[in-house]
Amino acid sequence: PTRSQPMTKAKAKPSAKSQTQAFASVRAAPINRDFFFHQIGRTLFQTGLRAGQQSGLTVLLDYWEANLPDDDDRWLAYTLATTHHETDATIQPIREYGTDEEKRLRYDITGNDPKRARQMGNTTPGDGVRYSGRGYVQLTWKNNYARAGKELGVDLIQNPDQALDPKVAVAVLFKGMIEGWFTTKKLADYLNANTTDWSGARQIVNGTDKAEQIGRAHV
Image 1: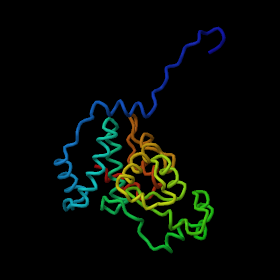
Image 2: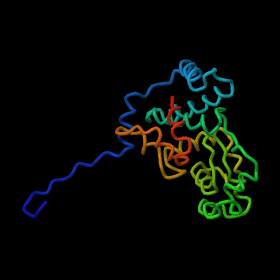
Image 3: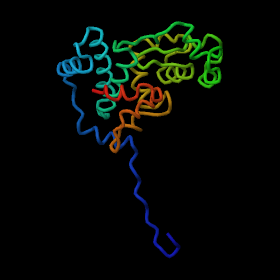
Image 4: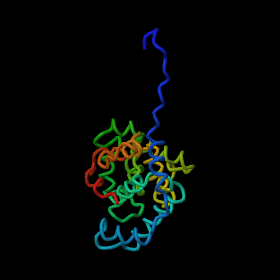
C-alpha cells in the first residue's frame, strides 16, 4: 500500500502440517484389523497374507496407533506402500539385496560415484557396504544412519545392524518420512489438505524410482 492507504494485517496462512492435522483429526478412529488384513490380503498381496507379512503389518499399525493416531491416514497408506516395495513385500526389516561388490560400486568412495559417496558421509573405504540399505525403508548412507541414530538415541554408526530391529526400523520409517530425514522432503509436502500427490511422494525416500508403482499401491 502507499503511505496514504491504511495498513491491513494479512491473515497468517496455516502450515501444511496444521492443515493436514485438521483434515485428519475428524477421521481418527481405531483400525479394524480383521477387515484391514482381509482387504489388503486380497488386493495388494492378492493371494492373502502370510504370517510374516501380517506380523510386520501389525508392528506398523501398532506404532501408528500408539504414536500418530490423529495424523492423516493417507500418510499411513503411503508408508505401507513404501514398506511393501522396499521390503520386497515381506513387510519385515531386511538388508538391501545384492552382493557386497554391488553395494561397494553403488555407495563407496571406491565405487562408481565417489563424489556422491562423500556427500552422503561414506568417506572411508568399506562404508558403502557398511551403510547400505536396511530396515522397512532401506536406510542408506552414513549421514542417514547418523541422523536416525541421533534422533532415536541408538548408535547406528557403530552398530548399523540395529536398523534391522523392528522397533528401530518402524521408528525410522515413520519419523523419517514425516520429518524429512532422508531427502528433506516429507509426507506433508505431498499429502495435505490441498494436495494428494501419491507419485510425487516418492521424493521423500528415493527420487522417482518406482514412483508410479508405489503410488498405485497405497491402500
